[in-house]
Every structure is written in C-alpha cells, then in structure tokens.
Image (cartoon, rainbow, N blue to C red; front, side, top):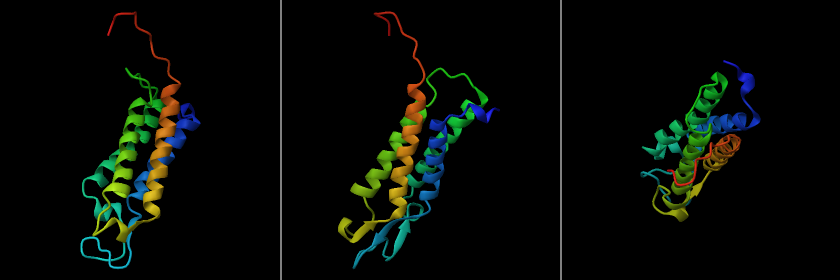
Length: 149
C-alpha cells in the first residue's frame, strides 16, 4: 500500500466522507416555538430522526475511504476510478437536501429549523462529489468504434 498515490482530490473526498459521518451525529434540526419532533422540543441529530437515511449516509461516507484504499493499493478497475464514488456522493447530496428542505421531520417546516449538522452534511457531500469527480475526470476512457454498444 502506497499512500503517496493519493492526490489532493482523493484527500478532499476522504475529508468529505469523514465530515459526513460526523455530521450524522450532530444537530440537524431544532424546534422553534410550538414545534415538535416526535412529541419533543429541542435539537435533534440525523441519527435521532432519520431511521433509514442515517444508515445510507454512513454507508455513503465510507465510499471515499474505499476509493482511497483502491488507489493506494493500485487495484485495477473496469470503470474510471472515482466514478462510483461520485454517483454515491450525488445520491447522498440528494438525501441530505431532501430531508432538510422537503421532508423535514416535525409538526411543520416553519416550526423546525435547520442546524449546523445539516449544513455540514451538505458541505461534506459536496466535498465528496468534487474530489471524486476530479479523480474520475482524470481517467481516459477507451474509445469504441462507431456502431458498437
């Protein structure tokens, strides 16, 4: 294993993955006034409020670490390195945005505000996406002859 093979793009993605994992346990939602989440007032993390999504986000946070491992070990892949991680980062970004903007838990979106953890999750997924997109764009795809699929 040669960690010297990791470029700045992979390191940015790895930092994004770590931040995403940490953000799941930070406060994402906070109640205002008469707002309630599951009958309680206060601040709530993604781990407290999102049952399935929290697991999906933690799995997505592992993707840049796996990419770094693949690059450090110089494994051969049949697709450009970073491409699958970019797809996972896009899906994670969609989950974060959906749960923060459209499907906020609680009695009403106006009575439940977003906290630091949600903003950190958005930043983390953007870092993951940026790092993996830069990595996958550096790989040259073999061209196929015309008329082949």
